[in-house]
Amino acid sequence: MQFGIYAPIPMATVGSPEIAASHKDALFSLPSGSRDLQLEHSLDLLMAADRSGFDLCLFAERHLGSDLSAWLLAGAVGSRLENIRALVAIHPGLLDPVLTAKMAVSLDRMCKGGMALNIVNGWFDQEFEMFGGRILRGEDRYKRATEFIAILRGLWENDKFSIDGDFFKLRDAHLLLKPRHATAPEIFSVSAGDEGRDFIARTCDWWFINYPKDAETTDDVLRGIEEAIGDMRRRASHEGRAIRFAMNPFVAIGDDEVTAFDATIDRVLKFDPEPDARKLKRRMLPALKAGCVGKPADVRAQLKRFGDMGLELILCKMIPSVENIEAIGQQVLLPLKKEH
Figure (cartoon, one colour):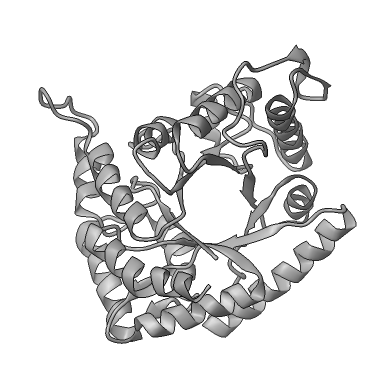
């Protein structure tokens, strides 16, 4: 099993005084000789994660926010790491696929751990309009993403690549730069609906599984994930393919479940006095129901259950501090890895 971590940026981070400070400072010029606080914090945290057994870092993208560009942050930090692979988010409707292919292989060669892409098919109208994207709805989003990925792989795997698609047309496009490995960078994505699941079954390498709607207990979460894995395996088998599975539980360790949970919530409220309701309700609270909060031994046991179900990557949501990363690494990740 592999373990991942989120790059500490405002969109993806809770309970961080450093991120709260960087969010406030983003609209002001930097003092002479200093660097952006998000970069400094990312270097500290991800170098600690690199030493503590983490295998991957997701660099999420939010163009409208105060977050640093995912691609630039991944290059600046990823090139300093020894083990961690950079997983960078990309919206097919916002960047040209040939440019994306070039940026991806550049990053892949810069990072010892290589890179992968997380395809985001959702939309945020204001973001698309401001940054020059083309908004598509329904099935067209997935058709465009399918062509987008075909171009990426075509350029990574061939000397020249042509396509006459509905959304992209290329003739003899080529890159004079190849990926780090003979196999092309992997493609991740997340989707809950039928069209999105079919897209993943046909096109992607990894699926981030959504949390079941209305799950109230950890058992509800486990049943929902088991059903989702079975459904995706059937879809992928129909396409003659196999998909690998990932999820993103909130991981917190303490003397017991209640203590770890309360400490997490207290920290979030302390450093996010006006927390983003979407981030908390849609991302944090469901992830807290995954059963990875409590004694280290109990968290390890739950992660083993996920592994037995077929999950191969756990992207850990957590309070982003060096101390917490090191503690989770030493008490959860490394013991699990030693067993395998």
